[in-house]
Figure 1 (cartoon, one colour):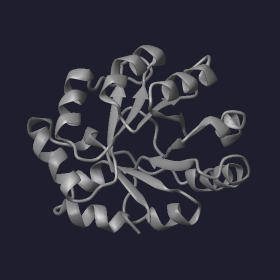
Figure 2 (spheres, one colour):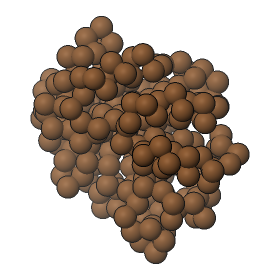
Figure 3 (cartoon, helix red, strand yellow):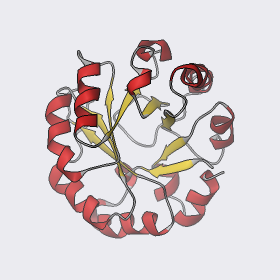
Figure 4 (cartoon, helix red, strand yellow):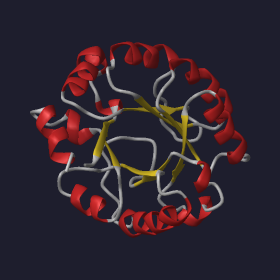
Length: 214
């Protein structure tokens, strides 16, 4: 069954505890946390104080997605919260293998993110060391964008690659995911979908999550 990681980027930050508790009670699989530094992407989001508050009220594991320039600094900043995953963008990291080892040494599952233009082959020699690869199906930085269809053949290529090199590595897709495209994503091997607007703007969040858990 497809795993669902609602992105709190689309939550109501005035009622963040309520929203996090609601998606956890609705049986989401992960709570996706987008950390942006205003440099790697033009948006600026949340730091450890807010994420710590999320961790305290969440009954599902955290999936922290770093969209930042200084990855090592942010890994060390969020590691004490013991998320399930920390993912970083391959486009920004000069020493990805070293950082993957560091994340794992902290008891956290390492993941790498690929922007829409970055081919799966860019991480061929890292794949065996990863627990998850996150494919962006929008340009990173803002919620509510339209799904980029080219992620489908890209996910299929990554699926073929991981079957040879690391069959236990999960494939996650983030951006513009809804009940309209979730089946197509599953068909090309995607294991986890990040959904922000679709879940938090739905009239019934439990129904929204169930619609994606196909």
